[in-house]
Image (cartoon, rainbow, N blue to C red):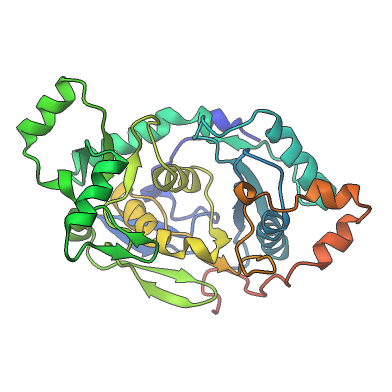
Length: 329
């Protein structure tokens, strides 16, 4: 197994005969490669953040990724989404792996840590800058909220108000002057410009079928934060490509993010994986389980005397989709 530090984004234009890659990019368009479903090796991943102990929601996400890979002679990789250094706690890396081993869901492959891969995200951001699909944003949260409050018809998405595009209209000279003067800034995706370059895109979800990409679903998302040289959206796209992930499994609350991720994949020349946005585990009030809300941890369940089998039996069944090339929905 290669070290996570050595994983590189490949030139996917030369991957036509590589079974792990489902799609290749040729002349700016994604096209199906000559895959043999009999030799297809599925790669999935489970990607927790080391900000707390795992709970039942994490257990289900890990189970889905692990079992679908196992059914298809594949591998489920572990990735730590640890770019937010303000929330990470070092002790949770080992504790998360302990929970996964207890459940029987931890493979032998070395875990990837996003925090060790910042140069890869910077390189991807540079590629996007050269294509003219990014811009620096000097707005803080308060300024954005005030601008939205002033607008009679502020843009909205599935998660609420969207960034109103305040800095999108700044001239190149004004942007350069502010950067030279040391003004803090993030980097945003110009979703409209990206859509113009990419044309119509789709993605395939094993629960809901083929969906047309809506470039403005989340507006001009942040690609690199003020305090962190990347973001969830950019890092996850870069790492899925670097690890050769063929089926992305994650909660249905992240379905809207996939519209942005397909745009980034097309812009960066990455392969298109398939997706499964599975149901969420909720509490008695129908709220999604979350570490920040102090959801009951697997460690607590284990200490109460429950076996791993008993915990897994509490979870919904894993969907029966195979996710192979040409597979049904």
